[in-house]
Image 1 (spheres, rainbow over the protein chains, first blue to last red):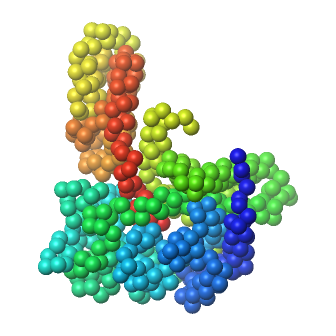
Image 2: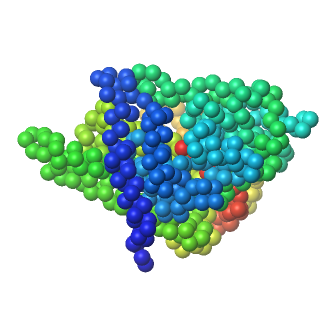
Image 3: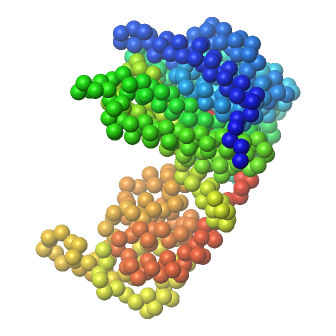
Length: 392
Length: 148
């Protein structure tokens, strides 16, 4: 059994680590806000700064680490992507190395330039419109937005909610029911709807001002008899939930790596806090309960990291990793919660004092469970394999 | 919390199997087959409720139902947490896993033992079939993509 990371990936890891330390971490204060009341905090970096960072990453040859080489990306394997994501997650600065949703990898030749490349080069923003207002995210099987064919067009009617990043120039990736009788797995089609299409209205998505500047409204997309050309169907008709099939399961591992990275930073911050904060004339790092918390954090990070790396190595070998990915999601989501909890104890509460990176990490840790809800489904996937007689 | 003296399952085996084979949550019928409330667990009240077989609305069966785990929106259809509510909101979609029977504090231990010892092996294989095909698209991956 070889636990060694390949040499070329170690180099990538080291480059990303340096980039995060030298370029991104110094920007944390701009994101969190410099004013006394933090009224100047923001959700994202200024566009010019993002452009500058993008050029630097392109110069390193790392733009599009998760995008296949044939589409112009760096095309790293799953383990490479996990290593990159782990490093990037160690800062609260929202910047990625040209991450594009794998759904857009299925664009045809005509759509590639207009949609995929535009998103890849940060010229346009894709609003992923899957969920619907007044419905839980887990209820996508009961989606109501309909699309009917009329005169060579598809007419979309209904509402969607998107949590994607809002921008000046955008298009929507809309999941709509085309054949209700076939159910969600065969009866849902994905459409690319351009900004300005008649009948397509967008509202929300603005950053809230002042103290809560880091809170962003979801985007509401309204389709009122919106006519979309059939050429704007992404993939094949009725096959929306088969898009990105080759890449989507690996994203679950990469999200696990993100949990590991964020937890690692929390451990680093908590260690500094323990070594610098005194109570009753003694550094708190000398207290057994604080040492125990640090040990628990470090152990759970190590376990999660090994799980992620092992599953990623398996995926790169071409082995099926559905069960391993489910285990990574289940464990990493619970791990980041307990790490945030332990780190907050070491901080002796001020983890939720605004303006500290730690506060943002604790918020993000809670958000992980919003992203990775439905842990029960992962338990089902794991249990299915066990019931089939598999020995773990 | 049933009575200490409980019905011998051999006497009710036929009807119990019929109940467990019906495609609907069996908890209420199993409760009615049980011996009833043990007064030793009652609060100090004037009314004698020993042997009563009503649902105590603890909601354990609703919480234990795996179908409601998969479709939580059904749970929101009513505020009630009784076995009747469970039968109405799950109905014929019941997985027949018998988890509700095992969760109910009013069902006799003898019936629970019978379910675990005689019925569980059948339940396991049926549940495995219901877990779906491995090639089916994992819709949760799309939700993660939209939320992340």
